[in-house]
Image (cartoon, rainbow, N blue to C red; front, side, top):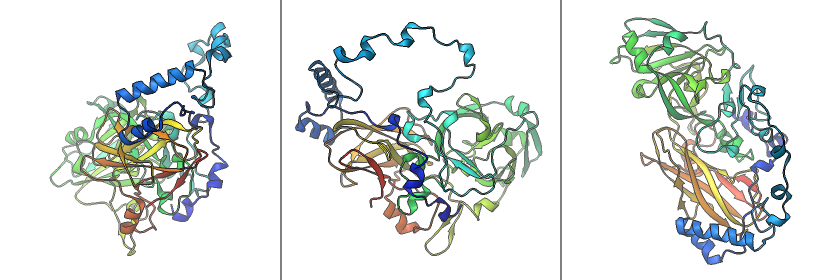
Length: 465
């Protein structure tokens, strides 16, 4: 993938993804809150006393008959709202039987919450990318049907009865496992994020795409189930004194293969399930590698072979791709760890604040080196920062959801998030990253993302600092 292939205009993207009602934010009451109270929220955040005051204020406003334009969008005095006063069709008819939908599907009103491709992204053969709709997700788990996709030669629906996994190299016994063999072994389930090394690639240059789905959507977080790699290597009598590297090879036509550093052997698993069901074909059914904290290309799909060796393998995708071009012309290789990163998903590009007042600002943070320790949020382009609330669970090498209250006064604003992980690493500004890495790169961009809010409430993608 070249830089030319990923430079897109906002016009290209908006032709495919129009702002959705679902992504637009609710109106919030503002006129019955004092300026002093709003200032206090912005400075100190929300505690139980302030939350209680807000609840009472909302109730008082509703009781006083505050107009729709001043209260939450979609609310109105009870005496004037037929949606609550009159019986609706679904209250007087028989619902559908479970037999009509043996495998559950989302509501028809969620039809626009889908993975999307980037218009203008050059395809090579069957290579493709589909971005997860981060702006429409809640919590930390990505639904299977919305998990991002990155294929080098398209995806396959492989017959699990015909699939095999070979383990060879620095082992006493070369072994070939069937799916039945693997699923008889001890299994574990763990929640981890997976992020493509090229996620946020377009932000190396000027901001080229309008929404968080396209800036950060090659990111997902799921519960994976499978057999620990250590169990398989023990079965084969692996020489873990000499064997410091693993070469993982997939069954797809691109011959995808990657070097895996064995330093994190205890975390790696060979997985067959995701979020409680078998892997989807586009996510590697029936078998994939799970390498927590490492870029997604190392999570080899349709896994067919693992070879234990004593040095890096220098595969094609470790030299021709997924290497960082430095300012002096050299390549930075084997930089597979996904560094600490965060992004605000609500509000974010393509959305719109419909009125002044209180909003819950929400986003995601993650680090390939462990747990998220802190997320700070700025509402003035990085001049001042407030610490957000981290929602539980806070897991190692998984997405952490953060929230923070903010009262918008209607003035233009630039909002940002900055994550810190348990190693003390702080997410950098884009200028800081460019000072070291230059601006010709594609991969491993973990810089701070900025969203600009105009006085009319429209949110757009900008770069600051």
